[in-house]
Amino acid sequence: MQRAALLDAARSLLSEGGTEALTFPALAERTGLARSSVYEYFRSRAAVVEELCEVDFPLWAAEVEAAMAAADSPEGKVEAYVRQQLALVGDRRHRAVVAISASELDAGAREKIRAAHGGLATLIVEALGALGHTQPRLVAMLLQGVVDAAVRRIELGAAEDPESITEAAVAMALRGVRG
Image 1 (tube, rainbow, N blue to C red):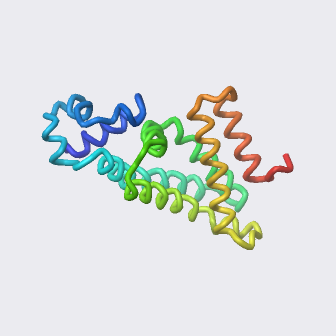
Image 2 (image 1 turned 90 degrees about the vertical axis):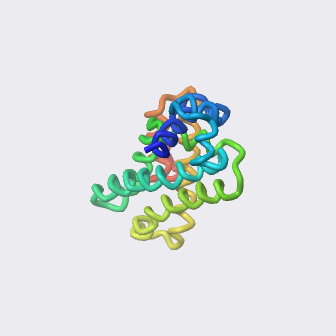
């Protein structure tokens, strides 16, 4: 229970204040633990990040996968893939990982984030193949790049509202740059 409380506190800290806010004293304060107790659960900030990725990414992937499963065409699956990921931007778990991704992490934590994003991209490979792409894995990674750019745009609080960014990302995913 303490580990789960620490992860929840880490999500809140990252969501509210970015990576600078994720400190062991802040985790201790949020959970009511002594700072030395936090070290019993996690050896470093990077270890907290790695565990957040291990816990949260599969949940997001399951949400994306469920949205795609509800679609009845390859185009619908692509649209669901983009829309669901962008809908998750408002989720504090997602905001936490966006904050994490922007920070300096050790190689292990960066690799976990990279692998998790790669796992998301594999969800769309079959639909892209059904649409006639001869290199669906490559296209999936490029599509994920569009989604990642839209996430960053939303997170930055760009001049456009999140719905406009989502619509532009969906249009790019479905029609490319033809407009």
